[in-house]
Length: 69
Image (cartoon, rainbow, N blue to C red; front, side, top):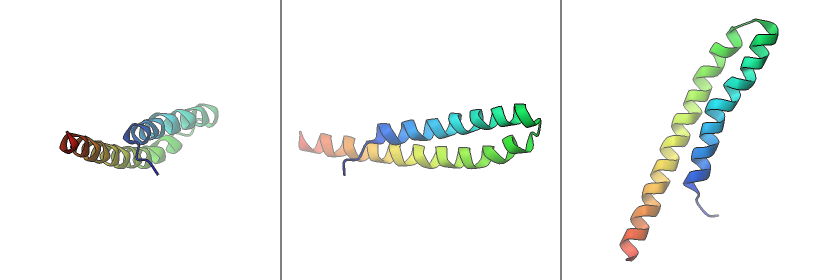
């Protein structure tokens, strides 16, 4: 399987922005803000993990490419 750090970065951004936006719709319908508060921590956790993984994979690919030249 081919490593794709851009894809993992894109997925972490979608999770960071997409899930809170979907829950914002639920909040506006139900007028219960606890959904939003409970969604922040998991979204930020997934974003940070995805960011670290994609950056480390990008560095590995960059180092591998520079050692071949």
